[in-house]
Image 1 (cartoon, rainbow, N blue to C red):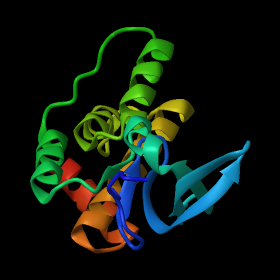
Image 2: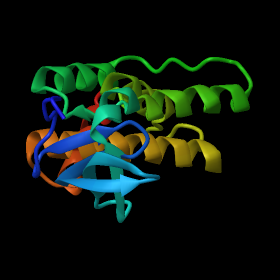
Image 3: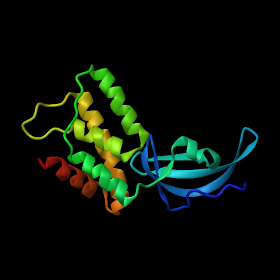
Length: 165
């Protein structure tokens, strides 16, 4: 194949619906009579390995980690005022899911910001809490990878930003 390799073994990448993973290797495999070159990506958090054809990587939304500047923009988004629409929860939940699965750290930060509850604020429903935690963990995993730290420290960083009034 004359295509250039987008990612190398050891690179951390973001897959929109699963978050941050590490490229383990690139391998050739025959599938349905076709020779395919595949990125083998490990997602530690989900204990999952994904194989993505090299020629489909761009279309799948697979991308490099965000730049420090892009993550700073996401942190700024967290500091903004929450925007809560007064639409039905099912519609908002669907919008939040789309933002989380977009893989865009700024859109994910919007979900975290909008669903975050400070002490003394009304409690969240179970599904609101689940979506909030999914978004926070997805954002924290990329923050951890970009900052070269762990999930716990990245989550603490996000929570500290959210506490500032």
